[in-house]
Image 1: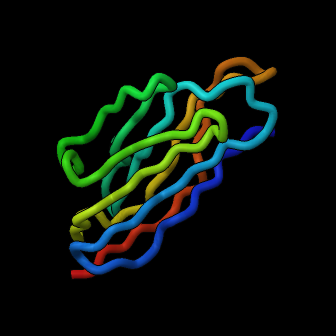
Image 2: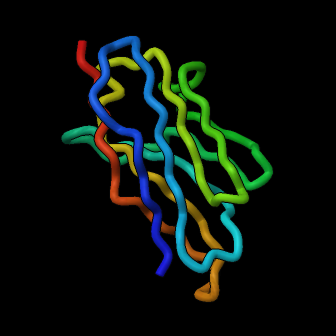
Image 3: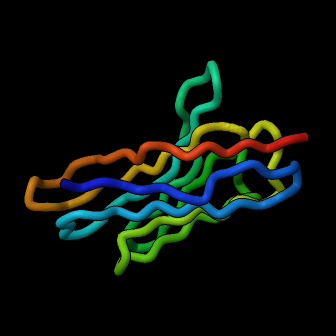
Length: 119
């Protein structure tokens, strides 16, 4: 069974930094597009950043310049370094990955990790 396990969330003061990690586990042939989404209370889930297996990245305007997404293909792990955090960044952050396995190519979601930024 494939799964994504996130870590690194927590409580931080405005202006601080956090690094989120997401590791894919199971019988994975390869990890393709990986990314991070977030959902704040009362709002829809939104894209934060994505990264292809080749390293091409895409960021939401709201985090561009403050966040960096990276990955380790050998470990099927994706990271999100967030700097200069703002209270508006408070949300549950979800990892998303397109994984190839015996079951084909499918999209998986992590369980979510809470990020809270205090003012």
